[in-house]
Amino acid sequence: MTEAWRPDEDLDRPRHAASGPVKVRVPAKINLHLGVGPVRADGYHELSTVYHAISLYDEITARRGDTLTLTMEGEGAGELALDESNLVIRAARALAAHAKVPAHARLHLRKQIPLAAGLAGGSADAAAALVACDALWGLGLSRDELAAIAAGIGSDVPFLVYGGTALGTGRGEAVSPVLARPNTWHWVVAVADGGLSTPDVYRELDRLRDAGQAPRLPGHASNPLLGSADQLLAALRQRDPAVLGAALDNDLQAAALSLRPGLADVLKAGHAAGALAGLVSGSGPTCVFLAADGPHATRIAEDLTAGELCRAARTAHGPVPGARVS
Ligand code: C5P
Image 1 (spheres, rainbow, N blue to C red):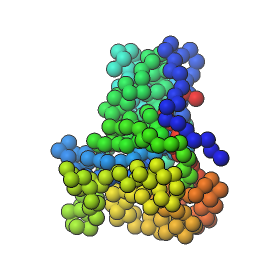
Image 2: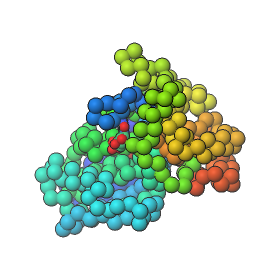
Image 3: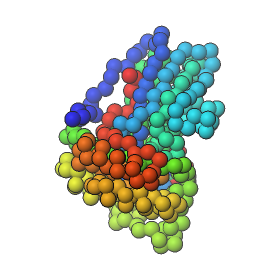
């Protein structure tokens, strides 16, 4: 049985520069609810989302150096640019600029979270870089201070500084923890071959909506296009996987399925394998399935692996903490 994580747990933050390497582990995220409003003047969509951190991890090791460098191994090695465009480098530079210290660190990324998968892997790595460099440089910034810097790097980055289960509003960067009695949920993560571009998926949703081909959820009176998270939040409090399964929803799913019709077969296979519910994770193409417990998740993952509709099927649980020194 996995021990439930409590959001009030936190590790001590070092206030002196670290002499040795700092290792930070950071989870992937899924969205239990993803309500997408209309596109805003700044090009982003207003969101009402429930983020959930799951036990699929990347790891960053930060060491002292005379300049800022990034190396990597694992998922996406050789594909992912390691230059100034990488979110890890951008995060380290943003933190250094905030703290007025030189951005000197040798960063190494060990990646398990697939790229462009709808699991916020790049955002997770940026959150890990903030926490790692904060410890390496002995800055002692609070989670809230790190999250404020994180918001400038990407919409999902602040959530991955905190982890757990949290409500995201604005473009997703305004995060508040969901306070529910601790409970552990069991998931199967079906990783697809190849990724999907997040902007493309948002654009496809706009196109489907304009063409009257994507449902508009009944939402807030102030913003009728934005589906409310209330039903999902109520389901979380009941701690019954069947109830949570019925409340999972994602406005981006129709767009991901439109761009990748084969995902419908993956969702069907998960249901056929006995999952309580399944949905596309964020902008996809990863699909996630809810299981009743850990052994149930293992059986579903085995069935999905045997069916060969996805590249890999992994079990995970949530919620777990965000980026933490390990
Ligand atoms: O914030 P981030 O850089 O991760 O977002 C990536 C892209 O996803 C944005 O450039 C935008 O096209 C889309 N997006 C959006 N609305 C959001 C979040 C992201 O349209 N709330």
